[in-house]
Length: 123
Image (tube, rainbow, N blue to C red):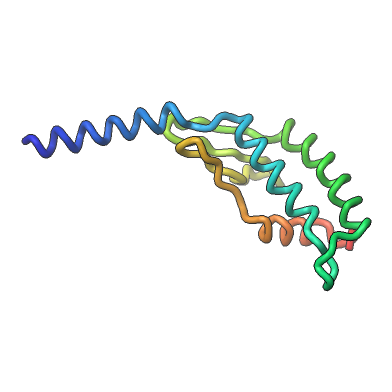
């Protein structure tokens, strides 16, 4: 019976820690903006250097991205975790998950690939 009590106590403490450290919308917005900005500024040439065109794409993309994220990101708080969603093509797509004061998103490579697929005319 003691083991059950300790297990229950640990689970309750873990739940309380998760509730207290659940990231809010601002944390999701900050992490997503940082990831997208870094992905947009990645070098496109074979030499590994960032060109003027890369900087221009990053500047325009970051401006549009900030506007879109600020207006479209919806963060659902489930007490122990939070989920960031953006509506796209009539569906709500998960773009971030937050737990224990950390927000998880796609990697920079996946973001760059998604950006290329969404706008091939920029290259």
